[in-house]
Image (tube, rainbow, N blue to C red; front, side, top):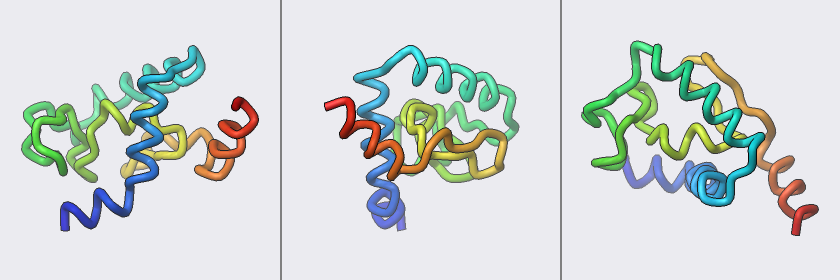
Length: 100
């Protein structure tokens, strides 16, 4: 089940990784605002007990995603609807194509 979940979300994981490495001020601002929300959430998993991938805490206790990547994925949203996607995956792909 874990590998299936990772495979299903691979594009968002890659997007979060790419955005974290090649970040902009706008992406950093969104990630920071999301981090503030998550830091007060009762579902945050600081110990890593509910992380889909071990040793990637802090994670979301609901979905198991590493917050280090999910917060930087502009097409991701909180499973508890505390914050929403900034753009769709398609919109982000189009933006990235324009920036090339």
